[in-house]
Image (tube, rainbow, N blue to C red):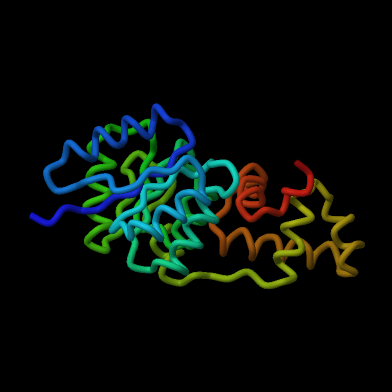
Length: 212
């Protein structure tokens, strides 16, 4: 039997060790590389060409989202499984848009990850059943790949930075009503609910990086 070659990337050594034990215990899988950050994961992937890369979302140097994008660009045949504690729409939809085929919560049972790896290796989408977001909505986002406009992006960036609608209108030289329209349209396209999800989305996009 040809085994599924898996790369594991997580910044916690104990977690990586546990994942390796779990994956290597499967008759149809083997871990061919390990990494503690995104850049190392990308380099490991180049060297080992895994069938599946299991990526933690919050890694140092290069986070899981940026790593997923880089992998999809350089190694499109490597399927991506996102493994994280974050289950809200902002995280899930961005990883799906970045090319992840599967999304599993760390707090779920180990068999969910095993199932996700097998599904991803077959080119199938797998979403953890414990996710608190709508699966049809996530898959629709992947199929349609809705893109927000430059003006909508500008409005969301300023919102994430804490500016009021009036301040945004003044900054962009548009009316407050137009700000509301751009905000509503962008949030709908991205599947975001409320300011907390917007801020998480902004962090994923690197919009708040300069403030860190």
